[in-house]
Amino acid sequence: MPTIVYMPLVKDAALNLDFDPSSSPFADFRRFSYDPKHFDTVRIQAYHNLMSQRARIVELLRSTVLRKRAAKAAVSAGAKPDMGGS
Image 1 (cartoon, rainbow, N blue to C red):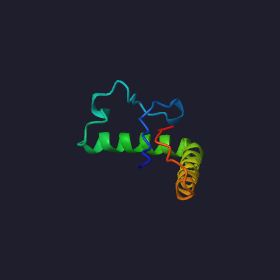
Image 2: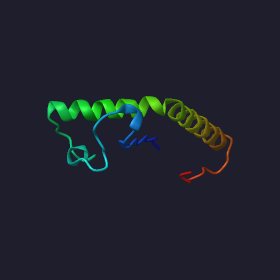
Image 3: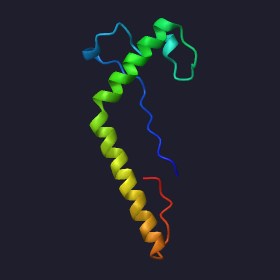
C-alpha cells in the first residue's frame, strides 16, 4: 500500500506573501495551469510549507517504513496481515 503525503497550502505569516491559499481562486489544488506569477507564488508557498514541516515529514515516513517492515516480518513469520490503515 503506498504512502501519500498530502500537504495543502497553508497561509503562513512568517512567509510575508500577500497570498492566502484558502481564498485565492488560482490556488485550487485541482488546478494544473498557472500563469508565471501565480506559479512562483504557489511554488514559494509549497516550498516554505515543506521545509517548515520537514522534520515531521521525515519522522512520519520513517515510522511508516518501520511499521511496514514489521508487518512484512510478521507475515513472513506466519502472522495474519493487519489490514487496518492506521
